[in-house]
Image 1 (cartoon, helix red, strand yellow):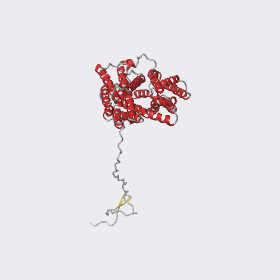
Image 2 (cartoon, rainbow, N blue to C red):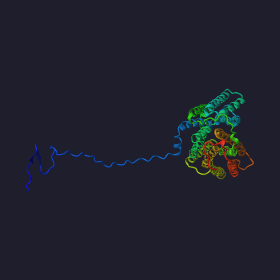
Image 3 (cartoon, rainbow, N blue to C red):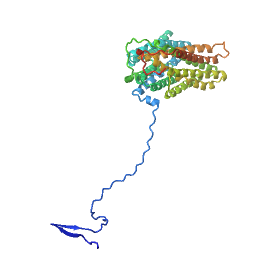
Length: 469
C-alpha cells in the first residue's frame, strides 16, 4: 500500500478533519514540536561523603570544668592558695634580715602555726554555719591587716612581742582549699567519679602552690625589699578570696546553727585525723632531712630545688590519679596508697645511705613524691564520706590542722635526729624518720579497717554517695 504524501482530509458533520499518517522525524532546532518536551530532571551525582573529624572524647578534667561557675571559683582559689606557701618563708626572711636572728624568725613562724591550729577549726565552723562569702571575706581582711601590722613592727623596730602578736593574728586566714573542696562536693553530689577527679585536682593544686610559693617569696624578698613577700602575698590572698567568694551560685548553702555534733566525734574521723597527723610527720621530717643533707654536702641552696622535685612528682601523680577511674572500696585503696608511700619513702634513705650523692637524691625524691598525692586524695575522699553533712569545710580544716601539727612535730624530731652525735651518720639516719612515720600511718589505717567502720547516722548524711566499704 503506498504511503500517503500529505494529510488526509475528511468532513464529519460540520467540521473538517485533517489526519496525517506520515512517519514522524525529529524536529530540527527552531522547528515547532508536536508535544512539549518532558521536563528535564537534574541528574544527581553521588556527592562525596565528607570525612567527619571524630569528636574528641572529653577528658575527666575537661568535663569537670564544664560545670557552670567551676572555672571562676577555681581560679580564685588558686590565687588565694598561692600565698599559703609564701607567708612562712617571707616572715623568716623578713625577720632574719632585719633582726639578724633566725631563732626569732623561727619562733614567730611556729607561733603563727600554733595559732592557726587553734583558730582555723573555729573559722571553718563559722563558714559552714553562715556561708563562705559572709565569713571568709572579713576573716581574710583581718588576716591581711595582721600582716600589715607585722610589716610595720619589723620596719619600725618594734619590740619582739609585737611580732608574735601580729603573726598570731594571721591565723584567721580561711582554709581556701577546704572551701573549694566543699564546693565540689556540693556541685558533684552523687557523682563519685567526678568528685574523685575534683579531689585529685585540688591536691595537685596544693602541691603546685606550695612548690611555687616559697620560690616566689624568696625572689621578692631578696630582689626587692625584705617586706615584699608578705606584702604581695597579702594582696594575692585578698584578691583571690574576693574572686572565689564572688561566685555565689556554686557556694554550698549555710547550715545555720545545728545540734549536729563536731566532726571529731563522727565515726571514723578521729582515726583518719591520726593518719593525717602521721602523714604530716612524713612531710616535715623529709624536708628537714633534705635540707640538712644538702647543707652537709656543701650545697645548701640546692635543697629548695630538690624539694621542688618532690612536690612536682606529687603534683604529676595527683593529676594522673584523677584521670584514672577508680573502683572498689575507698578504704582498700587507702591502704594500698599508704603501703606505696611507705615503700617509696625508703628510696631517699637508701640513696643517702648507699651513694652519699646529692645528685642521686633528686630522682629518689621525685619518685617518693609520687605516692603522697594519691594518698592525700583518697584520705580527703574518706573524710568527706565520714564528715557529717553541712560540716565538710570544718572537717577539711581539721585535716589541715592535723597535717600542720604533724609537719611541725616531724620537723622538730627530724632536726634533733639530724644533729644527734650518737649516730655514726646522723643526717642519713634522719631519712629513716619519714619511713617510720609512713609505716605508722599505715598501721593506724590497718587497725581502723580491722575494727570495722561504724555506719553513718541518718542525721550525718555525707555530701555524696559514699563508696561501699
